[in-house]
View (cartoon, rainbow, N blue to C red):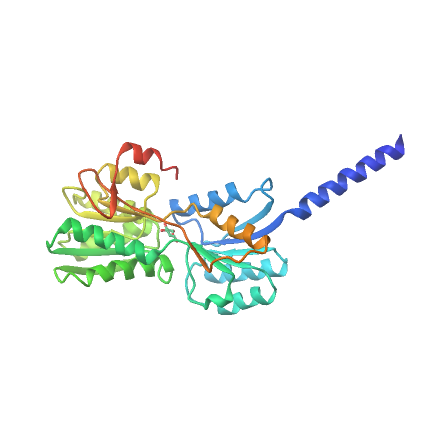
Length: 321
Ligand code: AHR
């Protein structure tokens, strides 16, 4: 009887070891926790990369610190993780560490934002097209203004991030076709509500007149609204035009309320796409160098746009994050 118990205990211990040995170790260096979008993106990874699905996920919140992000990637290399997923805080400064990951033979996936290193240094990338998002914002404004002049202020995302660079490039491409648009100033609000508020307060002091505020994400837009509320400035359908990016549930709630006129989605639900890429690599399949996560534009009720879906309660109900 004693021998049988020992044998059973041994079998159970072995099965625990083999079950955890089968889990794929995924190291994810997340940008931080700067926005609602980011929190939804983090949650999405925890929801998808579960032990039941065969993964052991270690997700590090890098708090917008590029040096920390590099150090954590190196830590994952030393710990011999099976896959490393990088959401790069900034586009620059990746060559050396990507080479180290490659030399260690660990597949590397760049997710959400992009790097300006050669794509030969990583396995594959998954994300949205930030420049296209900027173009969509510009086109929505072009259609809405229909030739009217506009003084424009821009609250940018974190300097050096592909999200800020792409959205600025895309919007500026459209703006370049409109001599009647004047971009008065463009300043970093770091993708946060506090950042958006501080930049808007500064803009209000410096510019007595403006027609449009472009915010590189929803949280910055909330901050800009707080600043305009405090200064008694009207915004929305009958005031300053606010354009935002992300289209989170709160952002779309404010779009439905007519406070944000255009909200260009950046879809944070990317973990399943990353997981499918990993499954394909595990199966020895070739994967595309880039998998696009598609997003769309939304506009306030009363606006009809070929570039954006007009907000309704029904559209909002479908937005879970
Ligand atoms: O990289 C995606 C961007 O980063 C989102 O637009 C923003 O909200 C986030 O912080």
